[in-house]
Length: 223
Image 1 (cartoon, rainbow, N blue to C red):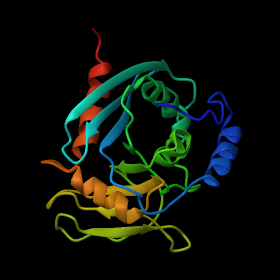
Image 2 (image 1 turned 180 degrees about the vertical axis):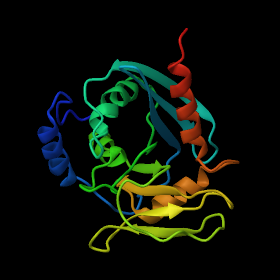
Image 3 (image 1 turned 60 degrees about the vertical axis):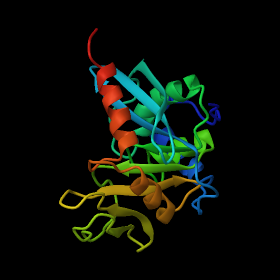
């Protein structure tokens, strides 16, 4: 999978913020043009000074595994909230470059535009990859919302300080905490929610993300 070389990962905090502000101008939040036949999910685990990235490609909506990739890389950027892409992005880009399959949509364990500068992991890498992308996170980074009803598929919108919708709290299963879904690039909130719900199996977390998370954890174990 090709990645657009837009910026360096070897940057300062100030430079990272400027990169986010520049990439924000390239974002396209719009209806999904067509349903994908192949989707990818991406997650990163950490062990000491190393990041372990995992990407899984699956059929959609069948969710059959087509390809798995795990890569390791030394961490070079500190942990700074709102700038996590500069910590996780390099190893995930290594994974995407190694893919033989051409996924048409990517789900990230992280935020999309539900971010102070609209540039969470899914938005940032969605622009670099030129692919529709969705952020699906377990917790909130930014925005305000009410709690959705305790019913599968129920949602409430996540809004910024100007009352603009930037994502949704989505109840994937009855009786569990909602997940935080936000569009990354080339998709809107409604289509992001629709795709995520089609990826839900027995558990709260969509199946593709469960698999990439498990794969990243397995890759972090000593051999």
